[in-house]
Length: 106
Image 1 (cartoon, helix red, strand yellow):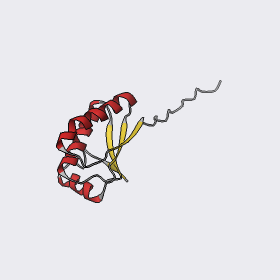
Image 2 (cartoon, one colour; image 1 turned 30 degrees about the vertical axis):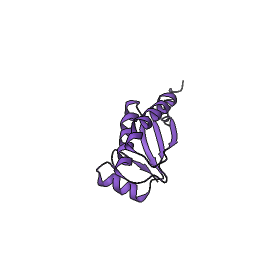
Image 3 (tube, one colour; image 1 turned 90 degrees about the horizontal axis):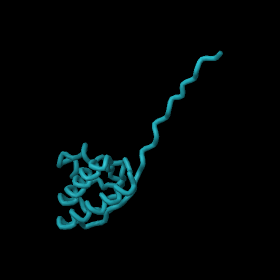
Image 4 (cartoon, one colour; image 1 turned 135 degrees about the vertical axis):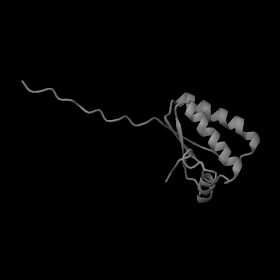
C-alpha cells in the first residue's frame, strides 16, 4: 500500500476590482466619492481594489480622498492600490507620510 499523498493548495488569487477616479476633486466631493466606492466594494467582495489615478491633480485634497478611500476599503476587508500614479502624486503621498497607507503598482 502506498503512502497517502498530500496536495499543497496554492493560495487563491485575491478577488480584484478595478476603478478609476477623475478630477479635479473638491473637498465637497469626498462623501459622495467614498459612498460610490463603498458600494462598488460591497457589491464586488473584492480583496484588492486597483484605483487608476491617471491624470489626477496631485494636491492635499486628492491625497485626503485617497486616504479616506483606503480607510473605507479596509472596513470592507479590502486594500486599495494606486495605479498609474504620477511621480508628483507619489512624492506628495510620501511627503505626507502615507506611502505605507497608499501603496502603488508600477
